[in-house]
Image 1 (cartoon, rainbow, N blue to C red):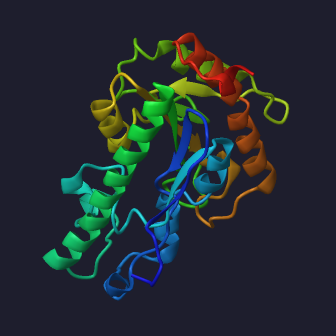
Image 2 (image 1 turned 90 degrees about the vertical axis):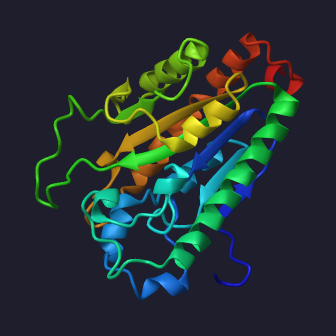
Length: 271
C-alpha cells in the first residue's frame, strides 16, 4: 500500500446526517495488480465513481478509496473478497487464485473499515440520539452491451431506495419523507421515478448498521440508475451529476424535520 494511503476518506462535521459512498473507490494495492484478469474499464463499470462527490450533501461523509474488486465493504466478511466469477457478475477477476495472505491483508482493511464505522456511529449517536445514513450507489441498466437497449424501466426505476434491512415500521416517517421529497424535486423539468425495494433491498453495510444500531440509526440505501452517464465508456453528463446532487440536497431539511419529530433535541436543527 502506498505510503500515507488510506483506504477511505472520512470528513467529520456537525449534525445527525452521514453520507457514505462505499463503492466509489478504484484503488487496488500494487501486489495484486499483476494478477488482475479484469480490465480497468470492466472494473470501473461495476464501481460507483461519481457517488463520492454526492456525499458533500451531508456534514459528515465517508468515501471508500479501495476498489470493491479488492475488498467489498457491502458484503459479509466471508464474501468480501471476490474469488470466483460467480462472486462478480460472471467477471473473471484474477488470472490465478489469490493467496491466503493476500486475502487476509484485504480483510484487514475490511475489519478496520467496520471498526471505523462503529466508532463514528457511536460518537454520532451519543450526541444526536438518532441519525440518518445515506448509503449512495449507482447501478447498470445496459448489461447486454454498449449498443443494447436500456432495461425495462418498470423493473429499473431511476432511483431505488433500499429499505430491506431495517425495521421499516420504526423508520417509516423518515423513509416516507425522503422518498416524497426526492420525487417532488424538479429534475430538469420532470420528476424522478423513485421507488422502494424494486431493484435492490440494501446490502451488508446497512444490514450491519441496523443490526448494531437498531434503534438509533436509519440507513437509506439510495441507488441511482446510470441514466446520467454511459456505463460502458464511464463518461457522465455534468448537468445530470450536479442535478442529482441538488436533488439529494433537497431532502436534507425534511430529514432534519423528521428527526426533530422523533424527539431529536438539538438547537442546530431547529434554528
